[in-house]
Image (tube, rainbow, N blue to C red; front, side, top):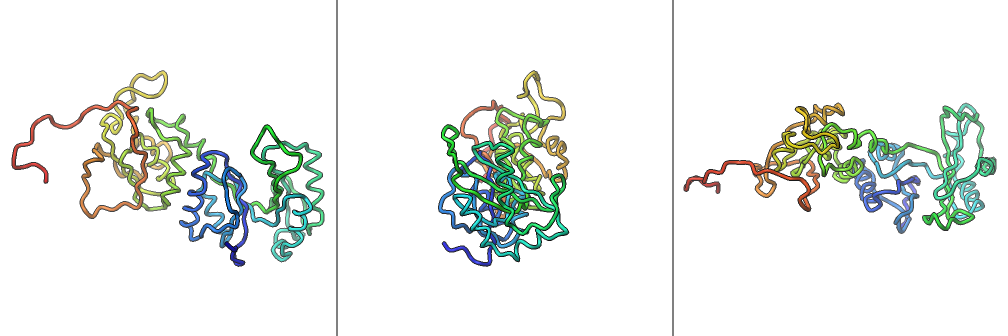
Length: 333
């Protein structure tokens, strides 16, 4: 597929985990922000370097405000399979696109990023010095530069067979970083209320992104558990609602899942988790309900249903409800 000339090329530096979810997440987020996934790259596989065509820098920035699968995005100025190919590619990049970031009143720095290989400081300086043909007129500022440029070298995926020279070399202007820090700040280990099957924080955000959750949406999880997926959706500004068949989990009762704690405390519940992250205003409710017997009115709609269905029995449950027989003549239709 030919790349439309109106679209700028960007380089995504991807994280090397949840590989099968990376492409669907990027496609979903581009669609959410009015872009379309366009690329001349035939396959992505396990490579951390993706070249995309995106309509505008604003869309690129919005993408990075949401993604947890991508580490950084760069405006791609040139690339090649050797230093000579890279330099030739850079010399063919339109000067008028470079000038706004290289003028005399600006400050900048150049970073070297390698994948699957470590370079010495001397080797890094040598690579930076080789870029002196670029029309840099500003001053170097290593602490707080206005613009950051990066040389990114790809040495393949095999740590036991690292080549002498990189497979591909890229040069670009840094635009923004992704939201990888959310994985740590929302870690289940730090959460007030957890269960044996609490969803990993990173996967929760990926699923919310796949669902294109946005501000003021209403998101429903019919197998809510301890609410990990609701937390991720609420972080993006959605109002959240859930159900679960387990009475103890919904009400925060019974044995604790945390080590060295026998019973759950008086305020261990999903609402408390949302409160922990300053997201309580997005909490609608959580009910005890059997997902196999829907209790919704016919015209009930949600903006997104995001859930992790139970594939087996890992949490003990208790039966709830009346043991009385339903009198004949008043059974539910």
